[in-house]
Length: 173
Image (spheres, rainbow, N blue to C red):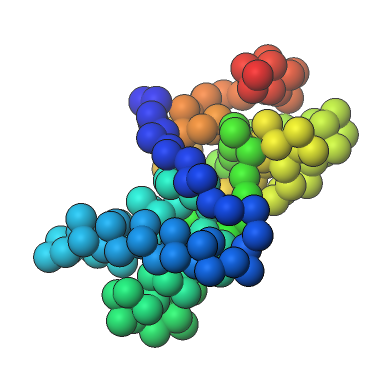
């Protein structure tokens, strides 16, 4: 199942210290919060939609969410750090996740990760200098019977062999 990423890039001013930058973030967060008023799981929805707009969750966005929703920043940070789909650093256009859960690890997940490290000089959490590809590891994707599993922007690839990594990366153009 392919996940379609709907991203609307914010045209934020370059100077992060400017009043214009802070006002734009606050305006966007207010819009997102208003769209989710009265919905269950509101904080998670607001975080997801904010990340879709910006591409990640910088401290300024987390602070604005905390203020607008009147939720302690510790709670906002707790949710962001708990769920692996949230990121506080810019990510590449493509995100490759290598599962290292027990079944995937035993069936070659670590070897796939080793290829990424050796061939592309990427460690988990890194992004290529051109901003195209980010590498992550996950503990389980819930597809153990298909191990080893890799995802590329949410698309699941099953029984991936280390020799198949180059083909996956070639899709990242």
